[in-house]
Image (tube, rainbow, N blue to C red; front, side, top):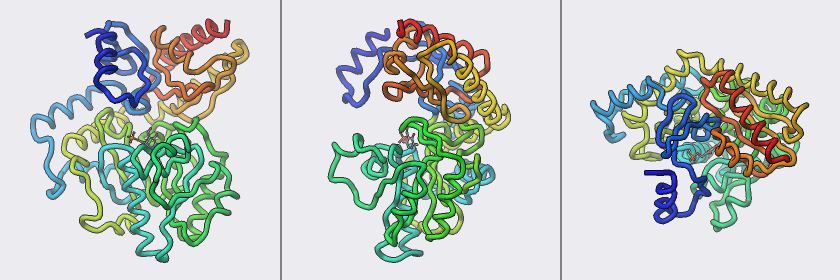
Length: 399
Ligand SMILES: Cc1ncc(COP(=O)(O)O)c(C=O)c1O
């Protein structure tokens, strides 16, 4: 099948939920992709922060194959050994004590919101069930998580929406404090807003949010779906300033490319759930957990968290140096290997297309920002190679 034939099939038979670019990737290895016509690409997107250990990491592939031959799935009505091992590993790596496994980021956030409300039913007043989230946040596409998402454009077409959410500007501690009353049981934030524009809060904001939550007996929920699993140069985004959440969520990179999500919590909060309060048929099955355990082992033994921090800084320094020579490069924000490349005078969506034409996969976050989220083991040489493509394509467009 060619790229064109793949596009024809998608165009005819899929619901038009994605504005797809006309390329069908059919093979991947590390930070490289190949399309159906045989063209090679360097991947600065990694499935949007999903392929932490890179495409088809040998450890992840071997674990999936081995597990698939043995047993893939049983109901959560029975113990699943890999699930216990994965929960233990995540507890060792983080501030959490217990995990619930599901299949995606939205599902993980649904679990977090349900858990917070269940906890509030036990520890707070009857009318205390609302959650504050941030403007420009992104928490998913289910009815509950799209409502938690602080972006009107995603919510508006799907009204009526579930009740119980309030939105405050991200990074504004005064606005958050002013929004707190007896109805608020939790605050839910991304440590760095990803889809909303790679927005890093000012130093001190997250610890201040933690203090407010403690003062008002509210839970702090971090959505680490995009920032988790080493992407920011720490295992989890909250670790940069040590503001520990009561609940946090993972998905994307957790399975090294295999679908799995997780909601993690401190003991006292996690124990608000009782049997049959929450469930997911496929959540944490043998195959998904085997993939996640292998992905974590790869990330840990191959030093990818440290690499994300160091190579991410190398990327930021390189962009700052290039800025002087190229007017269309306005700056860089983010942390580790979750970066926003700020543009001036060229349209990000057009630049994304030009890069794709020239063999580099990047992701436009609107008109003036490219999201850079490559595999965590990307090298400095690959960063140089990708930046050279961006510079050539951007210069061509700027005229
Ligand atoms: C921070 C964050 N939360 C939640 C989600 C939703 O994850 P999923 O698409 O796996 O449901 C995303 C997806 O981009 C995300 O970036």
